[in-house]
Length: 162
Figure (cartoon, rainbow, N blue to C red):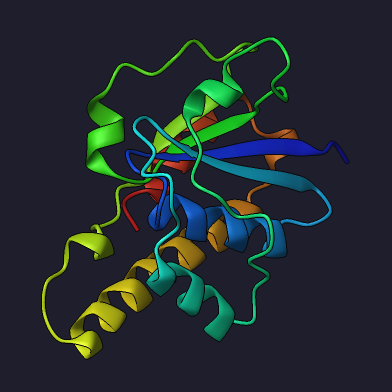
């Protein structure tokens, strides 16, 4: 089986895309490498995202907020799949991804935008984690190697609606 590289994009690369990277790193091993980046990275990973990942028993080492420019240059890993997980990144003009990876939008409400009690904020991060976990689990069930490009694109878009 091939080893696929997956990039999760968001604007700040501080919560949703970071959680998606960690989930895929755990669930997709050894067939998938996962990365995350932002169009305007915040430079920090939200502590609530780290707590959510730790609560789920996922490793958080090496997670950092980074620019999508790291993945568009000649030294970047070849990308097979690129998923936007927030509305802002989906509307932006993305860099040219060498190799023309399969892309899809998997919008998830921004837990970092939630204002309220610590419990309400924790619930928002937990909800975002659950949506990403479910979508990544569905993605990993796809027979990627046997699907043609059109069928795969349709399935990726369908997962984004789940």
